[in-house]
Image (cartoon, rainbow, N blue to C red; front, side, top):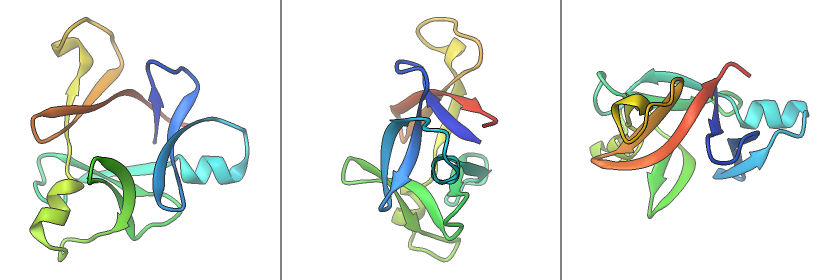
Length: 120
């Protein structure tokens, strides 16, 4: 799956040197790999979600020091690290405005990202 911005249509979360950026799809295989994630059971809470990198499979999306990045994490990583890579998902329609297909990704209680999942 890929995460496309709602505010910047055609721009997706992708990693570059392990940092997450919001870039337009340039149509390359490198972009497709960098912007693809597997949604898996949360590393700190299996009722939530974590996102494992498609092309660097030992790394997960996480927030650290107010920055999104991909880091090597597993179920044996320290609890605080696993929590940084575990997100609560909620449909956008349960928040401010109805917008079918949108997802709000929370880090703790704070909205972190509003996007839509793409099969791209």
